[in-house]
Image 1 (cartoon, rainbow, N blue to C red):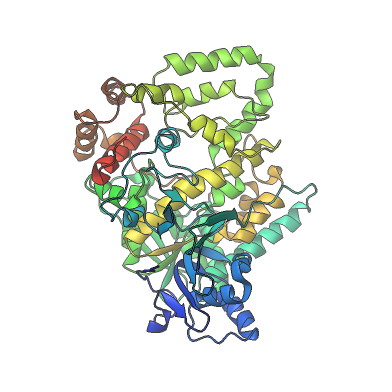
Image 2: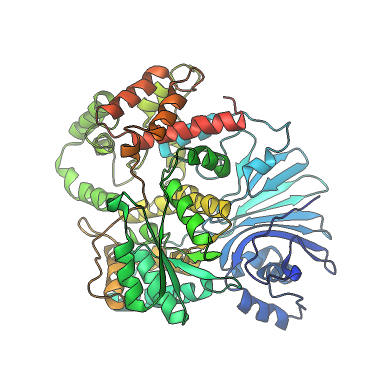
Amino acid sequence: MGLGHRRLSILDLSPLGHQPMVDSARGLTIAFNGEIYNHRELHNRLAAYGYSFRSRSDTEVLLAAYAIWGEGCLEYLNGMFAFALYDARHRVIFLARDRVGEKPLFFCQAGQTLRFASELKALLADPTSSRRIDQDALDCYLALGFVPGHRCILQGYNKLPAAHAMSFQLDNGKSRIWRYWSLPQPAAAHADDETLLSTLETLLEKAVGRQLVADVPVGVLLSGGLDSSLVTALAVRNSDRVRTFSIGFPGHGELDETKHARLIAHHFGTEHLELMADPAKADLIPRLVQQFDEPMADSSMIPTCLVSHLVRQHCTVALGGDGGDELFAGYPHYCRLLWMQQHLDKVPRWMRRLIASASRRWLPQGYAGSNLRTWLMALGEDLSLELPMVAGHFDDYSRAGLMRPRSSYRPTAERIRREYMPRLPDLLQRATRMDFTDYLTDDLLVKVDRASMLNSIEIRSPLLDHRLVEFAFGQLPSHLKATTKEKKIILKRLAARLLPPEFDQARKQGFSIPLTDWLKGGPFRELFWDTLSGPDCLFDSTAVQGLLRGQDRGYNNSERLFSLVQFELWRRHYRAIL
């Protein structure tokens, strides 16, 4: 048995905080990635049980929590974490991952051998490691843009899912995996709106306060949007010195949010710094492919990496606004789905299915905007039970075309997605829960973790405090989240209470890059066309050339092309085979 660790020091910078950390008296050793935000409260509580601490680190708090509560320690933890703890007395390895899945944990079990790491590339350091692509995972990637849940892009490997733990007995090789936390069921009755608003404010203020604690400089990533502005407002309540950072992208004024961030920073008197990102270069993409372990089709990984690099020059920890869209219904597709549910019953089901089928077969990918075909295909779904894949990349018909040379290939992503789709009558609850457990965990949080770790900066997300999550899904009624015309209703009410009156609540600026413009010419176009037009490209040349020509004709396939380029570069770098 062996444990190894490479540390980014955040709490107790002395050698007493180094890892792997050993409690020799109890036969415990731990390697831990992440932060336990309530470590101070747990420290005092565990000291009262008689545990004698040597350090001020949250790592030792984890050791003590296991020593006192065993596997039940997980219910006491507030934080983001992945850890491996060796209990020598019982000859068992205990692995766990945080409730939301902010920190990664890969593993491979073969017979009586277990290998695990924060990064898949660590497991692949063994030259005898299998490099065969898992077809179900590949199909999910092409459909969704990421590999969901416990699956891994390579056969024989797995991810420990969010909110799960695992034990492995060294003497006999037996393992057990279990879920230790779940989203609460929606409440049958709700408090009045003002009570809920005050509860939200209190929970968010406490979460921000806990996450400001560190022994290194801490900042706030302030885009000037709703979520990061609220985090800034409540950070000022918790600290008399708040540093905020906003990022500008010269030459792309539509992506520049510095003036909006400046308004919030001035209003709250933060120490504000505007940073200008260098133009993104095409050679960054292969570097990110290596860092991300599994292919991922989210092109916003590029600005996320640039931001992490810039902010790291000024602080080691930064608070962000991730989670607000999933918890409080901030995406436009929630309003569209509610509108469809309200109005489409007037259209006969057979007619909707006919339109969906015709769109699927006859409309080209990316025609008249990237999502028109997707939404027309969604007309065939039963919204009382299902959720259309409106944010997907390639539908089953398109995926079959891409994989045409391989007769054994069968699309499975839709079936897999249905298996973990929430079974709730409330459409908004169903959609937001699906995005929370699926898109947030396996796309957004992967993007933030890999890009920040590449630059040795820790990004924290106060909105993902599990008490806030439980409030949003268990106590908050859907009418305070979204309607057919409005999103993030309760967060906007909180903004009216906390933010300056001139703050623009209606503005929605995603973290994005002008990928469509970049593909019109220059190094990005050359990288994409060269990667996908080569003779060793895995995908059907006719299907790929159709996407490339469509892009030149004005169709919006830039994200789809990005997903194929990411996969091809990943496959070649890791020498993976199908």
